[in-house]
Structures are given as C-alpha cells and as structure tokens.
Length: 151
Length: 151
Image 1 (cartoon, each protein chain N blue to C red):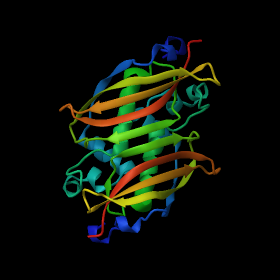
Image 2 (cartoon, helix red, strand yellow):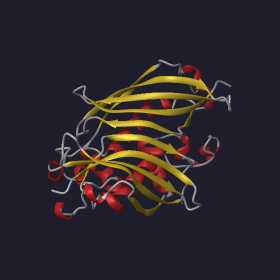
Image 3 (cartoon, rainbow over the protein chains, first blue to last red):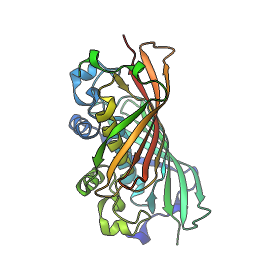
Image 4 (tube, one colour):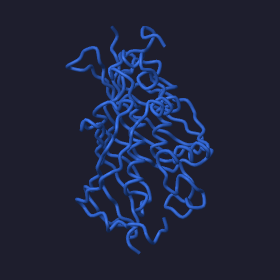
C-alpha cells in the first residue's frame, strides 16, 4: 500500500477498538511450526502430548503469538503507517490452542502519545485478546507499536 | 528423551546460567517466516525495508522469539522436564536481526520455587539474552517455565 494512503498514528486514539480477522489453526501448521521452532512433545505428537500438562496436541505459544501477528497485519497493521515495535510488556497463554481451533480477537489502543524526541513518530500501547470458537480466551498480550504521524 | 533421564526442576536453582547453541539466520528464513506470519515491508523486501525505521531487511520480532525458543529447546529445555509456560513478562527487541547474523545467547534462572498448590511442579523465572556476531544484544526476554520436580 502506498505510504500516502496508509492510516497514520492520529487515526488510532486511546480507546480505539480494532476487530480482527478470523484464523483456523490446522494440525499440520501446529506440527510444522513446532518442528522448526519448538520441538517439544506437546507440540509435535498427539500421543506424547497426552502425557503432558497440556493434555493433548497444542500449538507452541510462540506460534500463537505469530498467528496473532498475522491477524494484526491483515486487520489493521498493514494498512497503517506502522514502523515496528520495540517490545512486548506481557504475553499470557490462557488456554491451549488445539488443531482445528478457530481464533478471533480484538485489539484495543490503551494509550496513544507522540514521541517527545521524534515528533514524526507516535507511540501506541495496545492490548490484543484472542479467543477460540468456544469464546474461551487463549492469549492476551500488551505491546508497543510505533507509527508515523500525519505528515 | 525418556522421562526418567530428563533433568528435573531441582537441577535449575536460582542463579544457574545456561549457555545456548549458536544459530545463523538466513535471508530465506526471514522472508519465509514473514510471508506466513508478519508480512510487513521491513521483513519481506530489501528495497522497501530501506525506507523504514529499521533501515534494511530484518527478521520479524516474533521470528526472533521463535528462534530463541529453538535455541532454548536445543540447549537445555528438551533435556529437562519442562511442561511449558503460562506466559512472558517482557520482550525487548534491541537491535534488528539481519540476514546472515549469527545469534548466540545465555539463559539465567532468576528465581526457582516449588508450586504451593502442586508440589510436583516447579516454577522457574528465566531471562534469555541473545546477541549477534558483533556482541550487540538483539533480544532480552523474561518468562516463566514449569518443570516437573524429582519424583
């Protein structure tokens, strides 16, 4: 998307609520991500996973964070002037994400302020909550996003 | 690894420092991860990335977290009685991770305590720091890991 048509910092004031696209998590994706980045039994193999605290095959927590990121990109970030993030304040994995789960979510702007040192940058504190098809929360995360201000 | 030979909670007392395996991050991996989970210009395309705050192609922050997870698995987690994590207290992305960067790291046990409600579970607060081949820190994260105690 051309820079001029992207939504700048000013269009995300404190209190803005952004609905997010739905995403179904497949067994193949869970196992494929785990093989590359988190090869633990609870993410790789159903029989081995049943003997763990998670009680069955479930997605790596970092996989769920990555899925959240894709949902953010598709829903509001890639049509904004986002410049990335310096970090994350908290992630809570509240329920396992199982094969076939359909995730939905929303993102709330907790705080929006202009950078003191760089007035072309706005700093957004955001909270994203994801839930499964049974309306059980599976992830909540609070983090910072930097966006360009209106030029 | 058979359950009986895994290192339990008691082998990770407060103050333990765990060195981590090295990992080289390729251009192909950066772009492949971004296409699936974080399709923003700074992670997808060198020319577009040069116009962003990151100043060039760099790995998605969640990709760096996922690489950290794999380094943890290979270095100490998969030979332990880890049962997963309820969440992350902080992630700081301190420098961009570029194609060809060689990441090293260490993990420190900040606190180790037995669960009050479930004595078969130990709760570890850990901090992992990753640096690149120029000894610049690229990521620091603090998080919780649950491990089975010695039975």
